[in-house]
Image (cartoon, rainbow, N blue to C red; front, side):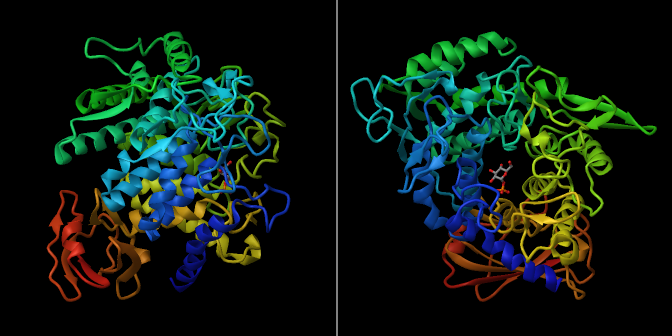
Length: 577
Ligand code: G1P
């Protein structure tokens, strides 16, 4: 589709604009100050990793200097490189999702490059007056001038990138509310869910954190088996959060015990200073520990958070995403309305928590309750409230505006990505295609070509260009629809393009770069078969013969070593039948 190709050129530019100008503010003056927050920083790097991985390595490491030892982080990037500010409005808040994004971005970087040394690069920790996830403040103790965490001996403490990710992931396992899922604190991805600090919980991001525990464990296993790394070094106090060979560190079912371990044992041990002692933890024990914790969260959500609703003679099932400040479950049927969020579904699908049947149930529920008249997927149903002070300001926006039920591009693209990842290519395509159609229907969207932050209730595009959704669009199209991605540094070709994405003669191509080489992949599907029907039959490359390995799922793998021996740009033609 020539229109799609042209539109995509603008979308590919969007992350670059955002790197320069920050978040939405220029074209739409009512919103933001252009600064870039923690979440945006990591999301924008996703597409930059695909475009120029060699250039992002240093920024990735610098960003870790923003992590606090309690698992939170400074939220705003200062003017200098690697400089952080606690908050732009001097209000110290904690977004509970922040610790989840670095893992996602770093693991993409590792898969694209195979650069496992990166995990062992050193970084400092951010240290300011805020402690114990905002529960304590230390205005008296002067933080070090450069805002770095010090040891009791007065040295700047540095730990590996891997250690920073472990801190951000493990602390969250214990930071639970009364339903034993991770606290919402001052909001999650949805900045508008900002009024449930005391009792709110984000089930949605609990599954994201669980997935991170699993994925980090998988990488540790890879380090152990392929690189012979049998143990990793961490600061001694981190082991408080780990199970010991002779028993678990606390009863996972006991909310109070978890909170006590985090806030009364771990935090006082690391704040305001660390001992500075390091210990080696066996990879085997760490892997076991993280998988046990991840599985525990998955089971908890599976057994506790299923929503079953009957509507107009049909039964629907999906996962609850939130608890509000009264400790009430947010989603389900009540007060004459059906309450459902897209976020609650995206991360249960993406994380692998939902099984195939559950994904089908989710898709049916999304189609029934979250589709708007223009084909887009909304962020939530109309809760029918004038405001919802127990959850957040989002619900004081008119329904269909911003974080209250708009077709919010970022979450919609992540939904599509999750569907592709789980093998639902056709459904993923429909979601992306709706966004393209809505954006390019100028009479309704009033948008120049780009993917805007959201579409309002009338289908009008809002906040052009400076949105993180473009990064996810690039990521999803390239690594999922075209299936061109890295895995432990090797190149994988795993197309999930649907029939309509091939030209009348059955071809579809994408240009990218991999292992420092320009890479063009042409797919030939002369019968225009649909995703799931075709298989890779033959591969040809310009010049050198390539030896691909065929994986169990039919995808191809080309080793990085092999690729690096090829000089100049690489053109690969893949025949599908
Ligand atoms: C904006 C923010 C992003 C936040 C989202 C939802 O999205 O930049 O951090 O998660 O709103 O509240 P964007 O404009 O990047 O699409």
